[in-house]
Image 1 (cartoon, rainbow, N blue to C red):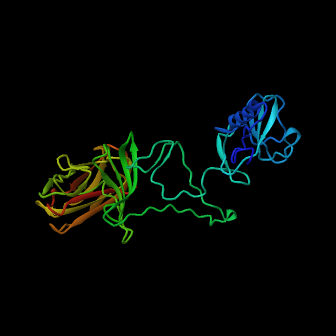
Image 2 (image 1 turned 135 degrees about the vertical axis):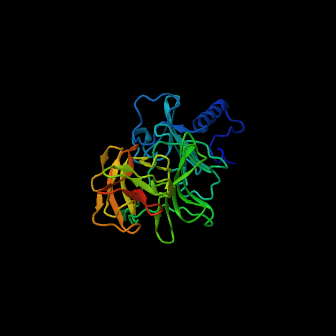
Length: 358
C-alpha cells in the first residue's frame, strides 16, 4: 500500500504510526498550498529574500539555491521553509502579477485560451452578448490589420459580409444613442445604397450605385426643371423676372413656382441653363436678351445672352448656360428683356433648369 495519495501526494497516517499529528499537519500544509492555487510570479529563478508565510511561486527554468532542480515546480513558503510541490497534468494556477490563468500540460505551464474558438453560441467583449446580438463588443477602438508577407500572409485584408438573397438586407447601421442615423450597404436589392435618417424611421437615399452597370444616382441631389405655361410679356429696356409656374421635376423642392426662384439648399457648385423662345407682340425688330440673377441683385457672370436681328415669332430662341458657386439660401432667377421693341417669352418653350454638381 502506498504511503501517499495518488494525485496530490498527501501523506497517509499509517497504522501504529507515532506522532500522527505530524503527518496530518504535513498533508494540511500541502492542501493549503495547492487548493485554489494562486502564485505571485513565474519568472524567478532565485528565492525571494523575505517571503511571507504562504507565498507561492512557479520556479522558472534554471532555479538556484533552495530552488535548485525545482524548475516549473510550485514553491511554497510555509513554517519557515520552502516546500516543493511537483505539478501534475491538469493543475491550474493563477499568476497574480500577470492576471493570467495557466494550466500544466505535463511538460510546462501553458495559457488556457484555446488555439481555436469554433461554433460558439455567444461571445461578448466588454459586454454581454444575447440572442439578438450573439457577438457584442463594448470598446473604444478596434483594429483589423493584414497579416504581412513576412508573417506568412499575403499583405492583403478582406472583410466579407454575405446575405442569402438579393431581397434581403446587408449593411452597416450607424447610430447615435441607439437611434439609426445612417445605413450603408445593400438593402432590399443588390444596389449599393447610402441612406440617412433624422429619427431612425424616415430614411432618405443620398447615394445609390446600380450593381448591374455602375451608374450612380443621387436621389436627393438638388435639381429642377421649371417652365411657363403662359406667354410672359416684357417691355422695352425692362429686366423682368420670368414667371415659371410649373416644374417638370423638382428634387428637394428647391424651386418655388410661386416666387419663380431657385433656392440653394446647401453650399456647392451649381450648373444652370435656360431656354427662351421669342413671340412677337408688335414688331419682329425686338432684340431679345436674358440673364440669370443672384439674390435678385447681381447678374451671374457668364449667364448673359442676346439675339439681334429680326426675329421669327415662336422660332427664334436664346440659350443660356453657366456654372456658379452658391451658399445655402442663395436664390437664382431668370430675367428677360427686349430692346427696340417689346415682345413675349413664349409659353411651353421657355424654361430654366439647374443641378448641383459639386
